[in-house]
Image (cartoon, rainbow, N blue to C red; front, side, top):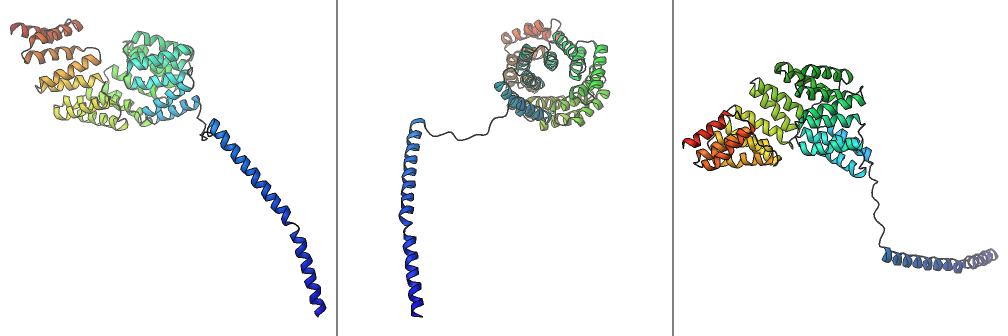
Length: 382
């Protein structure tokens, strides 16, 4: 028994001696690794001190074409400001991307920002005169800016380039209609719907044809059909409200204009038209409230200043009327009604020397203006 214990003790001692042989090797490896890590860290600090830290990785930006697609989706949803931002970014990434300029201009036309819309639409056509969509949008922009003969030419060019696309015929129908060529307008509108029965502007054009012909009752269901298919576009509610107002249905008109302000609360036109509808009902305080909202939304929207000035005038608040009517004429093209109303504001305040130039301006705009002539006679008599 004693011999067995001695044997086990000696064996354990031999194993311990063999295990101890590995420690110097392990320690040398650890020392070498620590030295290498120290040298690497020191070298990294020196490099960063020279060239600075590496930039934080950021997601890769989407392409210009993808921004156009994003803008299209936002436009479909009625988010015009966001769509404009997407189209603008597309043009920054690719300054030769024609449809981005054209579709950006289209939204500005819907917002009645004629000068900027025309600049963008012309840029698109300058880049690619064979782009049918660009020609059609240029035609629409020019038509809405009152340059109807030139608009017809651009729309015709669009239909020549792409005779199978609905947009060119839809824009041509509206331009023909505004030019007084109603038969040709109706034919173009029918062609647009045949080619694109779901096209937003083709559907809208059907209602516009009836509106031009004074068939307001027939226009309303056609505009409503467009609204049902495209409920996110405020300008369709403006179309409906305009036709209800032409029929003397002021409550229905106000409802549609209110809907326009809800769909696009960043557009002044809905508030302006709502206020003008309240004015027609004699609800002057409510009209002023809505017209002031229009100015808050867009301080450069001239019609709201004009309508607000006329509203103050009928309330005999001539001082406020003068401020807003002069602003309207300064921001936009002089309007006959605003000019002679300004004249009477000054005249009724006993300031005929300031009234006379406005009566004369109204007669310059319309030599047959009887109201302006009455203003001259009024001041002459005084």
